[in-house]
Length: 498
Image (cartoon, rainbow, N blue to C red; front, top):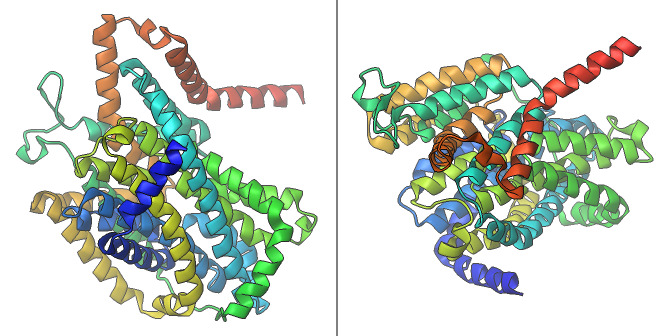
């Protein structure tokens, strides 16, 4: 009952013309970002984050989160109409979405995608509404050892679930190195500044993400020379209604994919992993599994439901524990710090308007987002017909303005370009960017928690096994950390027996 009343209070916060305007603007920007292949939600949020510096925190987080929701909705448009994934999580949608468009059923496919996204998001938002306050209350019992154990679990889970362990570890190490630059907050000594006064305060995470995501993606897109030729979609109320009448028979796929999305969002699996898992499991359990890949409606419904569910659920650990569940959540976490808010359990006590305003906006923005994408698909699909030679310079200029506005320093623009090249190289070599961003955002906090634990225990590592709570988290983190080694040994053992 208390959570329900808090949610009603959140709606009272969000129902102002300014907040509703920011929500609508964020959704429209998100759809534009989503239909531009390669740009994507994390990149859009990172590039546009500087626009929110002068806004109230609630309005800022509403706008940025709506950019992400809009991009999640819109990623399906290019997948279905152009066979080009607008987002990495939309790759699985192309398998059956484009064949449906070739059959003249693009309107049905898009309605399936958008409605599935809405259902997945609604499931995760309900989960956040009733679970996040409980997790936050539980987290109030945490001290430095518990927080370090949670950070270790977060880093380890990226290693345990990453597709390439070595590359994930290298990305994390690079992020830790960047997080260590500047003045040591405990001893006051300078680290890795190499005599450069501009480095005394460290490398701002915003410069890093604008370079890695924004400039890096533009370089990749320029190299690929994008050329768009796609199918047209006729979306009208009749098509939407006829498609919705078919949805009840796919209820099991919707429930299953929503659960997958929620789980993959809370753990750092991410929307892309969720979409592929949703698609694979739907194919496994569907009676039409052999028709997947030829234009099966379940083949677009499952990945979009799981992906949007994961995107929303990733905010649960970010708000309750201060730990992001995805790259976008990591960027939003950095935004919270810029706006002067401390992510974690105290957020639910000290910033109730902010927390419940955000949760209420997630309900409302997904409804508004569904209406926007169902009614404006032809308009946004037309964006893809604008030459990329016009769009790319505009995005680069927006990135440069965003980087310059952080400290009003030209040095930050050079840093942005450097990280753009690093992002380009990492993507070409298939290195994950999310662990790097995570380490930049959380690296110094993890270090502080570790050092406080060591000072409190006079250097005894046993502090991380001193009670059942910290012990269980630490053991789970160590299992995730060494899971790839366990899997490697197990495979070798099986091959030896075969």
